[in-house]
Image (spheres, rainbow, N blue to C red):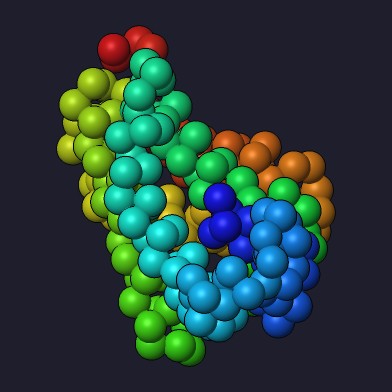
Length: 189
């Protein structure tokens, strides 16, 4: 609950504007409670990064449940990976946190773990899509996984800049367009 609130506050004010008092207010605690638990703002950010990396490991399994299609699960993964960034301003604030991840070794470790977990989940879904005939046999799923992951990040940035449509719509369209040459035609299936 506290870490979810921290992510929400980052979305509103960015990591520079994040304070323990703002997070405490979000969850109805006194700031001293957060100081005792996390020690500092940086401690809270590291805990948030660690928790996010840990949760990313289970992301594939959770997304696949209840979805009959690996490609539908992949589209959901793309959309959910950017769910906190539903406005260009929130996207910018979370991007500022990513900039911290890139320069702080401890934060980078967790950001890299999230990145790798996402790549593994994408690859597993693409492999499953090939096995189930949703993608052509022989598709280079490793290369496609790298492209999908890059496309997710790039689509978010492009959307935040040009502000056309919603981010989930743009992600769905972009991933679908990337994969469409690899989908068997109805006549050959």
